[in-house]
Image (cartoon, rainbow, N blue to C red; front, side, top):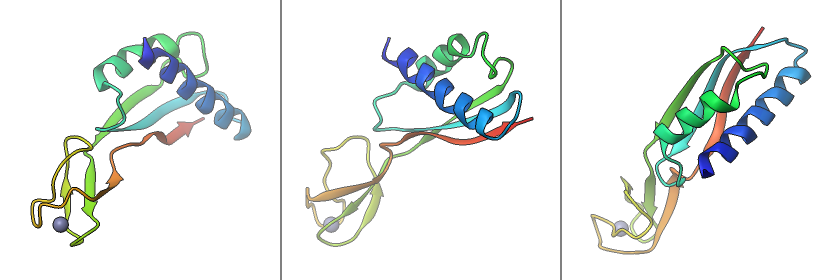
Length: 113
Ligand SMILES: [Zn+2]
């Protein structure tokens, strides 16, 4: 499962950050998942439950925040929400878009103690 390797990677990052901070455990973990990241939020939630077992993240509250993808038209500058990479500008019909957000998969914040 694709999401499990992502979850294990997130646990690795969070563990390294926690050690760096000299803390003993993580109480809260906030993750951002863009709608174009290819990650299914429900699958990642389940994978995180498995991945945190027997780690310093065990017992942490894990919150996954979906981020709606947004694009900017390179022709007219219009910004709008998109469902995939191949959409048209609603204002000028251009296909020349720049994805502004929605591709990310990252740890937004971590609370340790
Ligand atoms: Zn446009």
